[in-house]
Image 1 (spheres, rainbow, N blue to C red):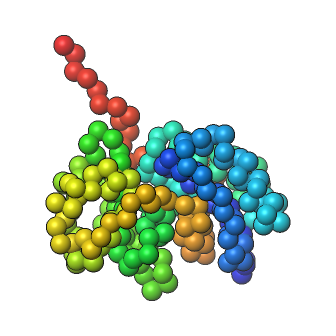
Image 2: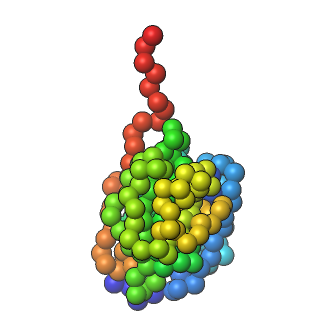
Length: 227
């Protein structure tokens, strides 16, 4: 187990595209919004590696936001992670994109939600441990905003595109459980890398072929009934 980890991380699960290198605890990151992931991702990888002064083969692992999130974005991220890891013979660390979003929120407990379309959200509740890393409370799920389980406690902070879209419904449903919510928060590769470092040290990695996206829902659109 290397004492000084070097991890390349990426997240393309939302309209934001980001790539980061965690090298000996130092972070180099690129972050852009605008749903241009297929054009941005590889140049961003090259840029962060160059700034960190590292070749792909000098890394210990590749980490990626495995979802849930945008179907197209997740396919791009998983494909790039697979290709880079396979070419350099590196293990892969899949990280929940909801967890990566929660990790970036300055709060001990976070209700992370992405807009899943069709009146639903991708949802997960996360609590920060003694090491400052978020851990899932319950399960990640795709659900209507008014159907999410009520969390214990009153100091939760909401974040993610699900809150941007459905904050009125969520606040009405959650009542006093939520202290506040933050608009325009995205998962970032720097937080994927932070979570991945702990996962790597715990031995929770996969080979490149097993670096697959997690959609939570397989339906891309509501099926219309025949007239």
